[in-house]
Length: 135
Image (cartoon, rainbow, N blue to C red; front, side, top):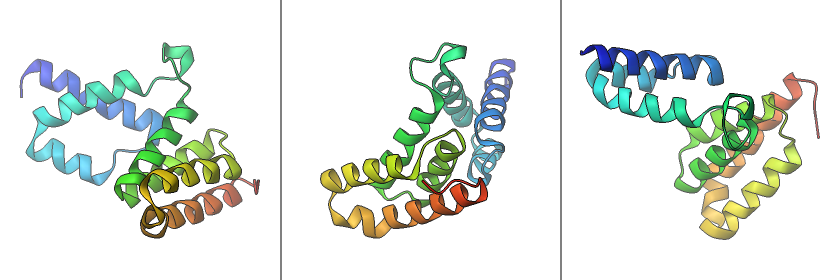
């Protein structure tokens, strides 16, 4: 890898650690086999996943919610659940998540709920319960 790629990979890894608490295994595989691809993705993610205090236009809670909803729309269960959990940890309420998931249902149809939305909501309930929040 080049020095630029190394720096970009490091920035992406640091951003995952900061915003998600760990680097998902799927991205570790990408780093091992396509480090330049992760470098590009990591820089884009590091630029986007900044809270307002760090220069982001939207707060991280909102960004996590948007990712949870988009992942739900495309049927990406693992990502949708992870982003919803992060949003809950950042203060998103279950009613707010439910309302967003209904918007996804309106755009993508009932299949989005049956394939992904239900799992996302149930996972968010578990995370909220762990945090002592139910509403």
